[in-house]
Image 1 (cartoon, rainbow, N blue to C red):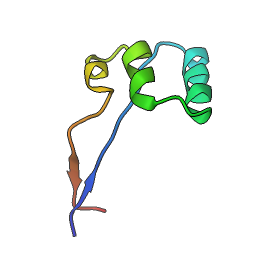
Image 2 (cartoon, rainbow, N blue to C red; image 1 turned 60 degrees about the horizontal axis):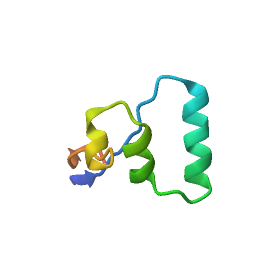
Image 3 (tube, helix red, strand yellow; image 1 turned 90 degrees about the vertical axis):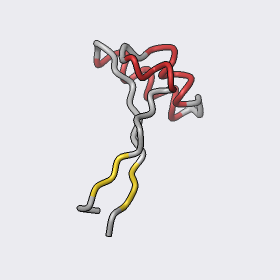
Length: 58
């Protein structure tokens, strides 16, 4: 069976900033808004989402 997987990430340079962002997520801040603000990856323009991933191992 093939499952479709959706992935998103926020790329930052420091663990300290990553933990601050995680705290914001855990308090209810919207992931895509935080990604647009903090991520250093070009995908931040899309809210840090990747295209769908298909993996036959799932």
